[in-house]
Image (cartoon, rainbow, N blue to C red):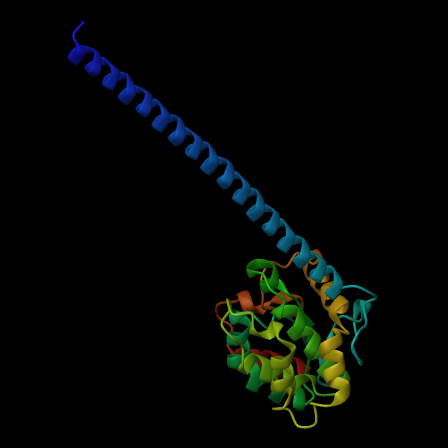
Length: 257
């Protein structure tokens, strides 16, 4: 065999060996990347589980303890906050969520009429507070706003603060009401509400468990959406012909007997 042929075969073997080493190195890198990615996935999964566990813990903590009904709450289990005179012949039952855009729309359209009828002693409104949006979109804004409204009830300022919350409602996907500082800031719009007692009630979540109990009553009642507005047991919010003027006529007719 000539020297030239031997050199050619040796070069070919060297190239083959080099290619095999290159393939082995590539396979090793691929395995390393797969293992690394697997570790990252596990870490991400662990982080997600950790966040969910932490949030679950916060939720349980926020609703821990006995249900403390706000001052003057009435009805079964003290879950209704009344507005208007006890002797009114008509009672409107309203289930609301402070993060609910439809609730805001109802309040904007009907508020003047409800105030007029309640102030005249012709209508009594019983408000039930729920946290439907918290469950649908996540967050705690419904809960915290409802607790703050209950704290306002303790101070005899429920109706005014209730109206302020809806007038300043954030977008449905913005959980701004989860911030106690925001709720306290809005209390400044109600004369005499921003007191140390109110702030403590808001920051401690005094009525959180009561809000959860009210929400459970909403579920048990078979209601599926907010607002749910009942007059004489009938959901008038589902009545497409209902207007503030028609509601006023109905209430005044009942008042006349």
